Image (cartoon, rainbow, N blue to C red; front, top):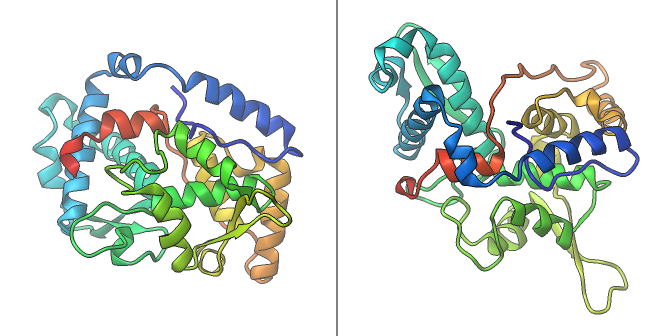
Length: 280
């Protein structure tokens, strides 16, 4: 199954990519029960490992290969690199964090947030879950909507992730407060009234810290990775991102591409089946 984040669609000028996104989106609407029914042994192992990685992240402890192998049946331990790759992909898509090996001798890993949100992305003291993932997706929606997305665009996307205004989410807390106040106060998002709108309507843009800590190319690479494609598949957006890279650093040229892995869950599937309420 595709891992398309439901609700994201490229800008109008990018018709080819838009068609591809719509096709993937339609395939992502299978009932959660159907997603679960297709789980094989390896998928279940990946799910268990994700739970373990979430726990270590919340406890602010590194994850060791030796500990992870104890969670894996012996007949699958030779597939550990693939299992870890798929679990780290899930963590990246859910939370916006990258897996880094910090000790090659002991095979110890930790996660690094893609953005410098407070408290390693949790935005609050304690052992919460990182909010960087939802920020990356919102930045992606803004990019695909021509660098300015209406509040309706954002909530259409979030609702398809089963994230609703006024309804507390076990990862993101109260979403409306998160995106219209917290991330705005931290200057990752700009939230303003649409000019001459009556009744008042609002729109989102990238905030100054988003421009400082990431780039159009990095966000496009993130969304391309979700869809198991390459940034150049979104031609007009890719050209815009390349121009942005050149303006940022003429001597460095464009950024390096991601290493693409082949996860199989939708973003909704990750939230619903890889993470259970016990991670709260």
